Length: 116
Image (cartoon, rainbow, N blue to C red; front, side, top):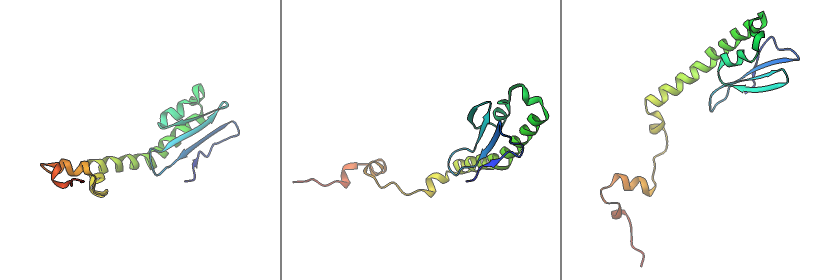
């Protein structure tokens, strides 16, 4: 997907929020000639160092928290409810391997044939 860009990006400071289908969403920060991939919105804000107390830093913190509340929290809630209901086992394909049959039956040798 296309990353959500922070509206106050400049040539020397750039922040993006990436939404992904698999795995957790993340922030990418480009600041002081380094780039970082960060999952926590507050850690993203902390990359500014002492500049986090400026008006731009406070606006960045609000934006990071807004992005996390808008996209990150619903994603994590969906994972929690999906795992709690056991939907991952019910919605997947049935395991038809020999190992699964051996666990279900009393005698795993009943379903085998002898080669002569």
